[in-house]
Image (tube, rainbow, N blue to C red; front, side, top):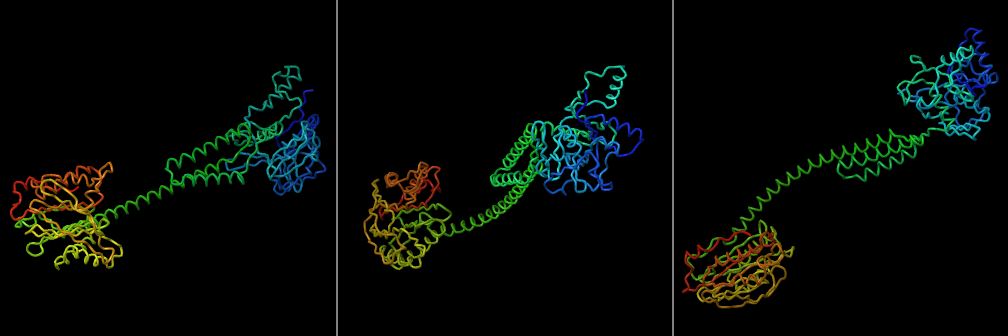
Length: 612
């Protein structure tokens, strides 16, 4: 009345013992509805004669049968048991080096025939399904009719089921000797059968070795050492409860998606900070591992973890290492280039300093320039925007009483302007010494400078010739800023601006004008670096501020003092703003024979020129 539907021995009864005992065991087994015992494939054993046993092969197998594990022969139960029971194969090998059995064969190949495993045979008897009703699709599933409909069991190409391990406390367990003792006491009337004993009516009862010290033990994902009968119990549990573990293969989609993620993250994190390059891949791996755990825990879906996660980690660690090495070498390269650039800069600065000294040596720098010529008072400054500049000034006597003076501004800045400036002074000086008038000097100098001027560099020039006996001044303007006429009493005004810069177009004509300076009167000559100097608010010094700075009682100022005053006001106006153009100024007072120069006392009161 309390008989189980199937009793399965996860044991091999392949050795003949005492005939009486074997016969008694077979007689008792025949009283059970269904009894399943273990069998084992063995190449040295006798091939199975399928027609002589209750256990029948499965005829409907689709796929490569040679992929199914098995041998040419098998070790099967003793003949007494074969007459009253079925056998199922207990072949089970570790799936990896750790010894864990993660897959269990549901079909075994013996010769050319395919037989059910112990677990599958137990299910077939439990559902009363004949082997010819089973359809095996290797690499896909095993279809088994059940009372609840078709049961589709997923299998690998080798006919193996992925074991969905559950804790051993999920199964009802009772000691075998305890069961026999309880049955004996109940049969003899000594003690009734325990009411709390596991109910076995209509169920599958599996008998296996669980005692420690036996050989039928091995590791599982849940325990370091557990009875191997649990592999069959977990297989039965998965089939009866449809609780299958579905393992997603690494190829193709997971590997393709991870390769795409690795590729995208590598390029997405290119040239990013090392910390960000590490944190984002770690976040991706943590999210993936978390998702894999959730799917496994709640959906029994096993995603590949080790290869994708460690692969991505290796890729990004390698990327970080390579980028770090590249950065180290790049920093060393930059340091070396900076060292070379610094050395080159020092050499260049030394050369430019020499060029500055050479350029400044071409300009008059000692004032007063003519101590014994009381009829003139002259002072000039030149402050380059760079090491060397393109502004120029010059003055010297032509003959006994004719003072030539010139101021100019070369287009551009730096070394090219300085070279052109030096050449322009030499050309102008040569024509003046040859006795040319200011206008003729500009005309001839223009033609010389225009020759082979491929860069089209030009220079604006104002030059004049002053007769120190009479104050008569002849002058010509080649496109330069108009000088300021100082009338001696504080009046200031610009001369007319006219003419064209020299050095670009040949055969230009320049108009020569004349005026007479009275004693105490003079000229203030300058370049556009003065009027176009800007302050921190981007405002220019302007012509108006220039005239206001020069609007003083000139008879109280020497040329040096007036030049210095202008320079100081310009410096205060500019403030911290950077100088972007050369600044040059020249002050000339005509004192006449009767107008003695300022006393030494007055001259000493003049502030010294300071660079901007």
